[in-house]
Image (tube, rainbow, N blue to C red; front, side):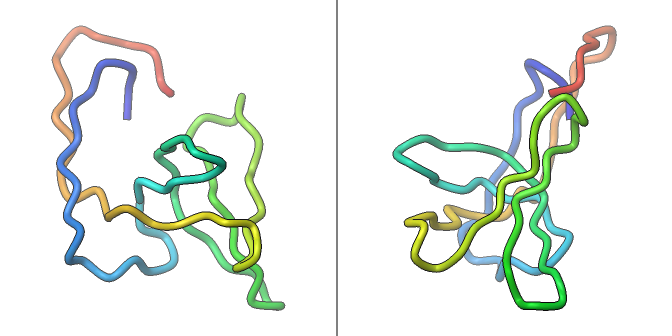
Length: 81
């Protein structure tokens, strides 16, 4: 995904490992890929390596708003987020 892309979020798709989701964390929304490690700890993984991986546990107060089902990219716009 790139800066200025528009996304369609489906709240009825079950979030699974590897899916791109819109998550609410600390009162803000973020778009990240989901991940789980061997200890069943959860992660929100950025597509852009400039941003950190966010570890999440049930007690961290995060929630999945929905799963990104479409991404609309305007041609000629660059800048991965």
